[in-house]
Image (cartoon, rainbow, N blue to C red; front, top):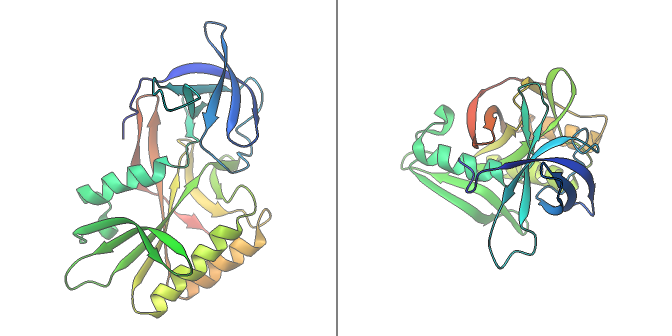
Amino acid sequence: MRFSTPLVPARLIRRYKRFLADCRLDDGREITAHCANPGSMLGLAAPDTRIWLEPNDDPKKKLKFGWRLVDHENGHFTGVDTAVPNRALKLALESGSIPELAAYTSVRPEVRYGQSSRIDFLLQAEGLPDAYIEVKSVTLSRHAGLAEFPDGVTTRGAKHLGELAEMVAQGHRAVMFYLVQRTDCTAMTLAADLDPAYAAASAAARAAGVEAMCYDAQISPEGITIGKPIPLRV
């Protein structure tokens, strides 16, 4: 998945109100960018962090830049846009490049299910059980090489796990798909200290037959694509 517009480098001044970030471009201009991430962004939003912004000329958008990447300035990047995993996975599913899910021929996004919820993707194929796929963006890393989810309390995430378990009980297939949007991690775990309820819900869901898939990502200022499977350590 390539970015629509070439990214430009900047320095973060501050992130506030969850969706706003004041930034300083390399030419000295100070601008406000949209931050497409409602999470805590733990470890990613320190002042003076090197970041990459995507400019736009859409007259309908008040903010003319969107924050897309954190540049760790050691050759590694983190993708901070939580909408990217869904877009990247849709392309991967449609091209059959996720081996565990390649047999499905129909990919439907945002299908209603559960209790007033929408599943990220419903996969279908003749002769196969329907597959319900929930996608999560993983950006936290507090230990070298190890990604963690979540980066704060996510009641909604625990609810999704329960709904996936119910799909398994009804005879369907259910998958929690974690996309690690960091190039410096080779494994993933659950941040049980930050949200013990989510960790417990995850264990219950896996015991009920919900599959957990973790993939890393190839990230650069040119774009983000899904990479290879990495282990989930629980």
